[in-house]
Length: 454
Ligand SMILES: O=P(O)(O)OC[C@H]1O[C@H](O)[C@H](O)[C@@H](O)[C@@H]1O
Image (cartoon, rainbow, N blue to C red; front, side):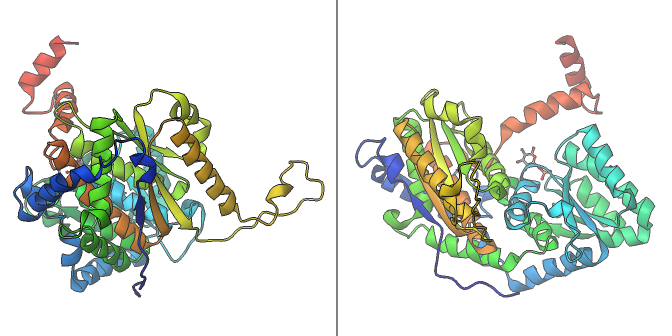
């Protein structure tokens, strides 16, 4: 596969956020950012056993990518449908990239060159699983079972259903060729099962946390299965790793400036909610991935910017009112895509019954861009600081850049906030209650205690 050679890069514009801060407020973070970058680089920060993502892009070899590609090619050859089972960090990154790059109607198109990619293991909806397993009944399907811990209930429950169905439909031998595990090297039920059944498996490194794992086989294998260019994705991330490095001056370092701007808005301007907004529906899941990245990294010790997301212009017709005139506790980060993949010109109509002839001859994207500009101006006028991230195009390369940019900025921002950005202790509370309520062996005392509270 050919790697794009390009001199372009995603860019960051914070001018419309800075105007809500005292002069020099962002620059004032320079030394703190430097300390955070050094702590990441030297492994001296909190959570330093989870820094494997930091130089991951530049350390991925072509051989490793070829190994992933070979497994992806087997699945592509043998499966009409590949079900990616995973949740949180074992799900969102792959879906974000696949949906950003794919056809918006992928599942309706009888595309015989690529398997249909479906996602499961990310909920416990009985109807969802019933409908999925029913759809799969007459399909040659394979499964990528992704779980770092290998014990996550949503994913494990789904995998048991899919494994049984796959074996019943294709026979145990053939199922073995189309079930792949991505999990811990040694621990967890997913590892035990993969080793016992002889599935092809990939390891999620110990020092890469789930939400930082999209550039491991967690994201790369599903992305390759869908037919996208992992090498270009990794190249984009590796270029951004350089561009956001600790020795890149603050003024030129996108990750440093984004981290500093968000923290300044949070601590000095009372902006407690960040809305990531897109004007391209293909970016919906990129924002979902971003929400986990920032939410789990920063939301702790009774602190943290609440990460929210909107799809524009869609949500301008539902959330627009709140954003324009509700409590002034929000700021907005717009991910803008400069050039769409396709061109569609708006046609003339003799009758002009809809009154839209003023748009005649314009590209649809020109209308979208004016909506974007008009929205940003209106929201800034309404007291909403605006950060702009510009992507030249929706390609693997720029998505790779965007992913690493957000990861790096997240590490820095969490450290600026004074928390361990790499743990997520709070996520256990619901699991503990659920297991107690389900009488999971080992939870006897919790079961008794929770029943008394009902
Ligand atoms: O990959 P897994 O171990 O299945 O974990 C999947 C997800 O669920 C957990 O509860 C964590 O909150 C997430 O950080 C993680 O990405």
